[in-house]
Image 1 (cartoon, helix red, strand yellow):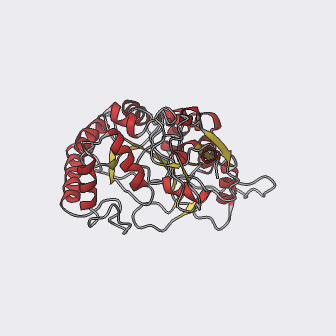
Image 2 (cartoon, rainbow, N blue to C red):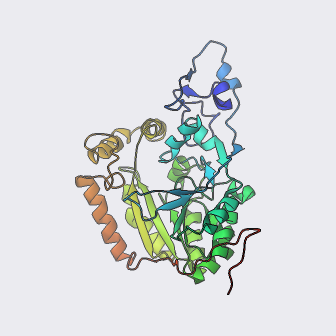
Amino acid sequence: MTSNALDGARQTGCVDGNRRRGRGARSNVAGRFESQTVEAFDDGWESEGDLPPFKTTVRTDAARSIVTRNDSPDISFDRTINPYRGCEHGCTYCYARPTHCYLGHSAGLDFETQLYAKPNAAELLEAELAKKSYTPATIALGSNTDPYQPIERKLGITRQILEVLAAARHPVGIVTKSATVLRDIDILSRMARDGLVKVALSVTTLDRQLARSMEPRASTPAKRLDALRQLSQAGVPTAVMVAPVIPALNDHEVEAILEAAAGSGVREAGYVMLRLPLEIKDLFREWLATDHPGRAKRVISLIQSMHGGRDYSSEFGLRQRGRGPYAEQVAKRFQLAAKRFRLNQRREQLRTDLFRAPTLQGGQFELI
């Protein structure tokens, strides 16, 4: 069990608000693979108040490979890089939360406090690109957890990865909720001149208070829009992701988000409906109960209307969009708004023909 579990934090029910201040999840229930759980109860000694607040811990992930492949028909890329496991942004709805259970952690507070970094990521990537069998295609950076979460400011692993990709002239697509991406605008603008990069920022809401509640340690909506503006002005192709669209909570903002993004220079947009697989269905309900109790029943009812009465269906083609009247209404609204604001008129195709494989130390350079 983790240190958080040992101090009584991995428990059923919500954790005291003072202990989880600034965090997204309300509980830290043991993962589905664990054989033990710890349940908090009042023993009359008021001991709960003695437990320390959750602190961020970063461990080293001794990764042996860095590029992950997929064959999902739902997404436009077949390879990804995730410099970190877990994410301090703490988004309550994050579909990556259940992956933390494979590490023996909770999908709740553990996911946003027990983090793993891959300091050898750039080295592993360079070795992968140097293989004679390697064929270039766009690498998605940040498909599972955010490559620009707060610990990146200190560790700089994402920047090291970008340096390798830039030197190899390899295409990359970035998805983030952080304005920290602007730190790397020097690399990104150079890559953009050769058609090698696209940056998407997820803007879930324009309401700062709602964003702070749902995504407590991500950049504010205003900072994300400003990041899109600065990237666009620097010649970097940008996109906005309205993700996730949450019924009866932020769904009314679709048009406003697209308008704001278009005004920031964005030319592409996408959206994803809220997904509630595995542990997320309970974590999200807990958050609704504490932050939006009056809307909880309506939110869940509309979610289930898109998945045949269930919280979630994993069927390709439907898991990110849903089906039924409500899902169709959102899709139509998004399409009309994108057309109105002249978004998605052309999709930026990143180049692969400029790729040049790295020469590893001790390797032989090609003759020119």
